[in-house]
Length: 614
Image (cartoon, rainbow, N blue to C red; front, side):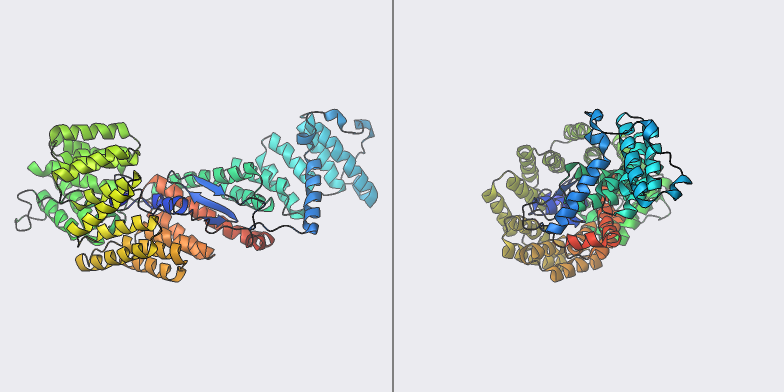
């Protein structure tokens, strides 16, 4: 499905009208729009709207998986046999008596001094006996005895299997640092030793070193040709755990800031424009050092629709309430400050402001609507429904209530109910373009393609100068793979944006055209230029940043892509967006580390698929 079809102009979350959240859009592009994916060291990764990362691996019989040579197969088979012997605990647990091990009295006495006098053949013979005895002790869960025996075997003959077996004992005793030490020693002999990589990854996981754990388990997946489902699931789990941990750390110190001008503008325009309250017009003479003067200043800045002015508006609304003496405008001031607190991701502060606004003026229905949006974003849809009901009880003829309640239905997948509310919003106010656009998107989601196309054609006839009409119509056409027609609509939207909003151009049509050219012609060069242009106009646009990262990654320009994913994390507004952004960044960083640390594995990746799954 096209990137914003699931959301339409009002966004996939109620608080993001005009465009969906960053990772919802990327997820739609990746998982719905012909499965655009990228390779984390050969594993195709997609981040879902819920922030979950999963893997799409090609089957072993597909052409993209190179067939190993006979020599490689023999080497792998021998390695597997050694690993099986080394994992005696796992292979012989059901019948430990089958192991032929000498009694304790027959085992050689070995220490650092005595081993020096042994011949090479004696060392090899004694090491094998000690290892077998260690396996038996392990099977009997006498882990300390097994450690002692494996240690003596290592004195006789340092061997990766012995180190890895001793690591298994430390693992059973939860001695994670020692597990890391022994598996690292094993990997010094054979850096493609799968069991050692898996055990070290598990130890790093327990030590909270998720990035290191992710690198090891990823390398293990590559060596094993992605055949081990448990390992693939471990990659997913570690990536998610790392991202969630890192996101919490970042959020503790991250300063609140407004998102891009595109984001803010699209949110504000999801409410019907209304005249300012009497007494706050531009020609009203108010002292800027008063609460009312700051409120007037903030409204004027907000209406200019450019990034610096949005910051100025947020500061003015804050100052207005600090100065106080707002009289009849106090509820309105709390509404406005709450709006910008919401946009900054300061949810609790926003809820407090909106609740105060309702307390001061129960008739201000917009405060109910915005609080409903907040409750929905915070995962409380029941509270959101209560707010909509309360708003309707105050003013059943307010079209904004029906429009935003339709958003609630849309997000919950209740498209028939959403369609009814969008239509009701249109019946009450046919001049609000976004109700018409979202109605067309909802009809499309319901499978009524003809009705949806007819709705957009009517929109073009009745609102010929509104760029959003052409932008979202283009998305529907793109979803139908009508590339030429879609690009024509995006071009019209771009030109109208330039004409009607030269100082506050919405960059979404540029990004959509970029995606269309990529999907249609694999035209990376032109797609990049369009994203770069979008970022010149709106440097804070999270969607442009994420799209650029994906385009670079698809071309194998991993280091450049990483910079954009890290930038996306900086721009993330909510914890969910931050988790997804960090997941992408860490997955990309892991790919770079694999290429640097395992050059032989990196060379294998070129023949193992990834990229675009069609």
